Amino acid sequence: MHKRGFRNSFLRFKNSRMNYNFNTILLLISTSLNILFLSVALFVVFQKGGIFYLKNKILNIGKRNIQNDLNINSYYKHKKSQFEILPKSNEYIVFLGDSITDEGEWVELLGNNNIVNRGISGDTTRRILNRLDAIIGIKPKQIFLMVGINDFVNEKKSITEVLSLYKTILEEIQTQTPQTQVFVQSVLPVNNNLTYIFENNEKLIQFNSRLQKLAQEFNYQYIDVFSYLANAENQLDAIYTTDGLHLNGKAYLVWKEVIKEYVAIN
Image 1 (tube, rainbow, N blue to C red):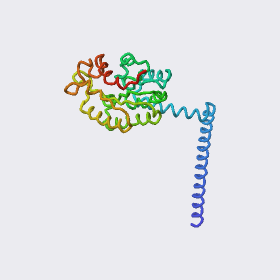
Image 2 (image 1 turned 135 degrees about the vertical axis):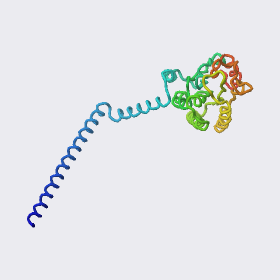
Image 3 (image 1 turned 60 degrees about the horizontal axis):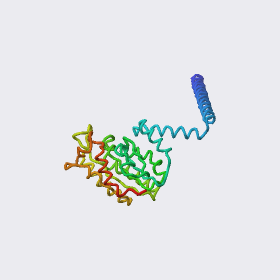
Image 4 (image 1 turned 90 degrees about the vertical axis):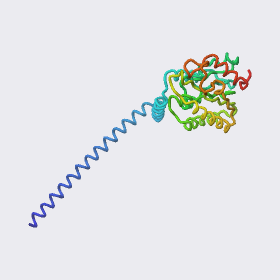
């Protein structure tokens, strides 16, 4: 009995020792393979430019995520790239916004050659933030800003969410180009009888009221354009639109009259 017990103990010890050696070998193989893969990866990164290659890869991933998130299309990309290479002057008067700004012939409407149109159809507060560097980088004399309707219509954002992003835009402008005069223009009404989308104009009125207070926080001039284009029901007057959202020539003439006193003279 004593010999059999000793033998069994010896066999258990021998088996555990073999298992230990086998696990150790597996661990060494796994570690060696990991080191090999890491070495190859580091070699490839080094060959492609080292830390700068990694940085560009990370930035490009971030940019792709931003573009997907913001629903950036080719029109936006082309306009943005054009704005980044056009001549720059701190005498410029920038009209910044979405399609409603984009479609305005501001130089001819206001007879001022210092005006540059930096509107892009479909823009939201987030998309403007994504391209704001090209605007504030020139440190323009004036900025006339109108944005927000697409935040409500396309992104279904709340008033608070849009105001938060709007505030970030104003903070960036004030920090980067404090000498620029900024004019915060109201969001315009829509005509729900004509448009393919629906937006509550009472909500837009509430937004504009809070936007006016936000502009005052930054000591920026708020301009009410909404009231001049709305009918008695606070809808965009049918005489100013064909699709209930965008503006015709008559509307731009009204808009011009509202803002012309603020536009710097050549």
